[in-house]
Image 1 (cartoon, chains in turn blue, brown):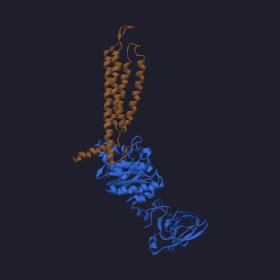
Image 2: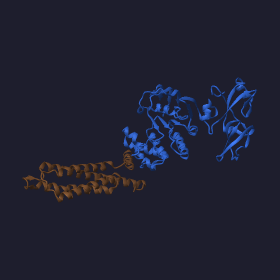
Image 3: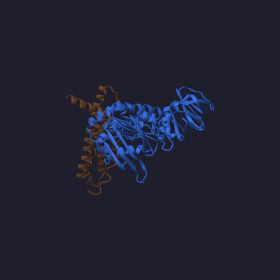
Image 4: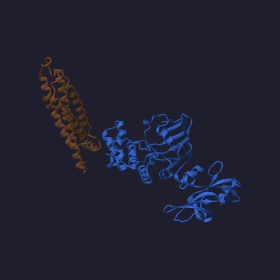
Length: 352
Length: 164
């Protein structure tokens, strides 16, 4: 396995569009890094630069102390798993998994042992004689992973591997990938736009937007202490509620809400007295205990949780209640906030 | 000795997931050689010699190619029966030498102008085609049969069912 250093990576395409800006990241040996962000944020481009499928316009990529920036993909000792599996339809599962080793002209008995070991790990032993078209989506993705495993590469690169699967299968595959990581202790870079995958799989998450890295941190850091409005809105499901408020006399005043601040919060916002800021409250931090009126628009029961959609003042808000609630449209609930985040309105950065 | 045993077992285990390509390809090669024979056999200055026997020969060649092709597919999937079929068809190639080339080579036609139905050079060529396709088919049959039996025995030892 390997350590990676990505130093000041930039990607500018021939048409002068810049997809990635000054990307810096140190990946430790055996670490599971997830690159997350909306479509077009540059996460796949970054992964493809690491794989060698895209040229690096400027910057340095170091794998295990060796500069591989200009090195062709086949010499980088990386294995990539694609969203569309990229399996050979005319080959059996066994042949698909063995193919890269056969190209390397490895001993056939060694290839066999590696394929059988990978198939055992992935639960594919009984499927080895089948063609990809005879497999389900999850099984095909496991074959794609098996093909990567047999190569025993320094780094595994996953480009949205679960996006083609249905929700249930995605959950199962997520757990399998996690087990695989524990078993192989591999260095993994994983690209997804699904924040659930990011939060459940990653040792560290790299959150990207418009080609810029917004925040790098553990899942809990990104959830609890987002750097800015983008990260706060992107991480968390349902997304965080935002309200424009004014800091005035030890309280926050906004459309339909007044929130008294604690001493600690007053100190934090002392330089914003009289100014407008953005108040961020996660749906799970809205509790039925307070004096802010939430006018119910819709009630979504999810089993153990209920999402209550409504308005606070004229602003849309969602509350996540931890029981089966049965509110009707136009009901008014009195709510409070048990945890709040404050953001500078101009810079969009969190106020710490 | 252990390492050798292990290697032998891996080789057998590998057969479960790979096709029996060598005998299958040898069979296809035999078909190709037979096509050369087929093309060569009727090349003669004497047109009326081949009549009813030509009809039989064409039919046999078609059946030969069909049987070989099906056997090639069968033996590729380790079906021992097709190995036996290939050995029989291969042996028949030797018998064909007597029926057609030898007879034609020994015949001289005098109707138009005195001429041998099959010149010696052509005779040798068609004999080479028949013998080589026969040898290839017998080799394919034997290799295919032996490998199929080895795999079947190995499957029994690991308790795996024979695929249909």
